[in-house]
Length: 469
Image (spheres, rainbow, N blue to C red):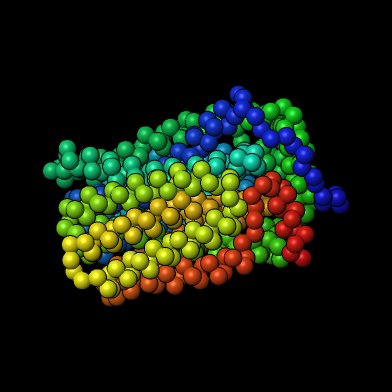
């Protein structure tokens, strides 16, 4: 058995051609995040004309919207397994094809049944991208830049959602009278999907996945694209050591998942994904305009004010990137839950205690915008980053897929539960529920979440093996 100890004396990266190449790889791969954001956000503006054009009942409407979310859960698991078997780059290219096929199928759908079928295809692509793109970015990034580079995918996700809101508004302002206006809104997503496919054909495979396949020469060639020559050789040595240790373990994937330290990480990952969704962030991103109408805005004012959520989301993630390599992951994560819980309480108290005066809807808008900003600046990117960092190389994509499956199921649960909760309990009580869940998240995650900042992926894997017998 190989000696399972490693030391890291690699020099920190300096600017150069390899840094520019790494930035290009990050931009191209993150187009998967852009498509994730656009395809989940575009339904917000396309739904009303879509219902009128295809004659959708409320039940069919709910099914057509939610099928993407449920398919995404299964896409995360399937995509993770395929990425472990065939490579991260290969899988992202496959996902780009699914994005293209799914988008064109939705645009040309003659009935709601066909539309729902192709939204399921899009869901598989969205779920796969949500699981694989962060892993690919984590595996090509140097450890000191990993936080900022991986969270650029989250920037693209929230940027895609914001772009969907803006593009919907622009298209509707010009062609709103057409019964087919929703098809134009959906069709825009073809452009980044084609760009992702063409771009990834020119991008390298993950060097860590190549090392796991005993393709060391190819792994070194990739590292030389994105590291200085000295750094590339030293990093390959570390990756090769950990990959060799993993290859000596002959157990199948289920036996690997049953190991105590791996099982612990799986549960940590599931907790991270579920608690991220139980903040209620997607209740705002999916039902923001309806929430604001319930708070007291007119329908037109609510649609206009809803764009502030997209702006707050984008501003939050940009601020989070500025801090993510400067603060410990645990500190930033628990702090994020503390701040979002305060905003939940403020929304609830405003809805309960304030009389129906002109200022009330504006206060609720302000507190919900603050919640979105805080969540997307801390919890949002950190959960995706931690999920990309904590799992061992041998099963990284599959384990990530399992946790993202749980995340998407929690997403669907919140999406289904939010409207009836608000109808039955009101805005105030609903946000008090979110506050209670936020307190539970802080209590649980403060105990179980490990620190990953400043460690290579291999160092963290070795640390967890030693810590959990």
